[in-house]
Length: 183
Image 1 (tube, rainbow, N blue to C red):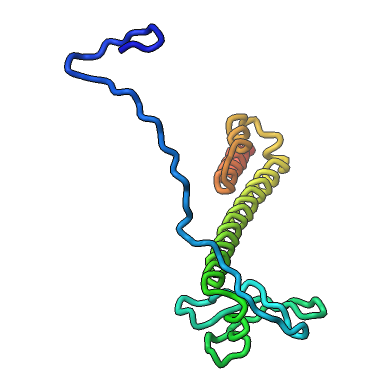
Image 2: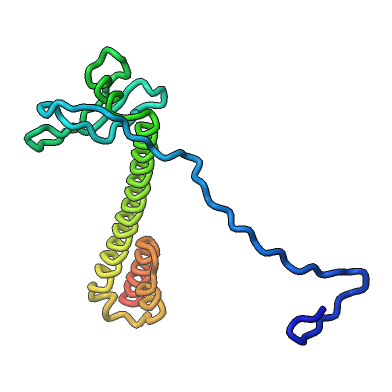
């Protein structure tokens, strides 16, 4: 094979084909773009935002209502009944695709919050264990018997301890060694 004056040996019976130019495929989303309904509003009624389903059966909804004075409130447990006035208003103003998209978005936000809360709880637990370790080491290192001890290896291990129980074990070992010397 020759390319730019360079040669490559190819085993007998094998051929090398030139690469085909890649065809750029236009990415198309699976979801179609959301359409916007034409509707009229009464200026004295609250503005409806983010309507979404709140259960898997799609029998209840929630949304944010913004009153004309600017106060916002979350309206929950809206039955998906055509006789319910708020549900009728939601269906007049939003398409099913918009409601479905809002529902998926709300689920994503809830999952992200749950994940962030798990991480926060892990960090709090880790900090609690670190504080307990520090307190345990400090209490032993402040004792005169441990300060004045000649047990350098045990004192070093006490400082290196990575768990409160390990620190407790080395601290107690130093105290036992020192009490044996004093007898």
